[in-house]
Amino acid sequence: MIIKVLMIFFIVFLLALAYTLWSHSDKKFLIYSPNENLTLKNIMRFTAILLVLVSILGIVILIIGSEESNLITLLLGSLIAAAFSIYLANIR
Image (cartoon, rainbow, N blue to C red; front, top):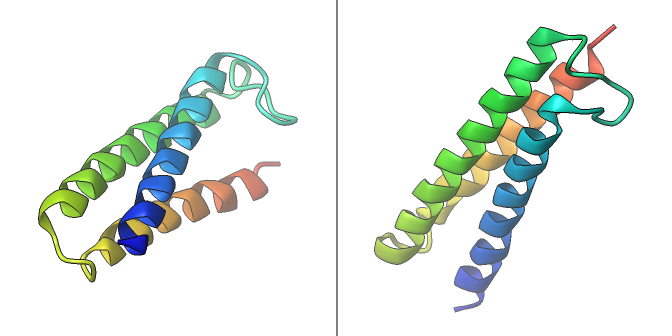
């Protein structure tokens, strides 16, 4: 039961991150301006879409999958967020 509750929090976190990325793709994000960097804007939106898809997959797994299959959601969500962070760190 505790794993389901924690997974719900993780999925809500992924959705909040997706919303933040999407809503800030037209205004200043941290120290960057996506309006001046089209690649950043596209990657922010692509990452937001991927996070929403992983969240939907996570909800489906939460409902019909086993507790061990929640690892898929954890790995995909973490890898997508990490990849975006690495891209952000390498912007010059």
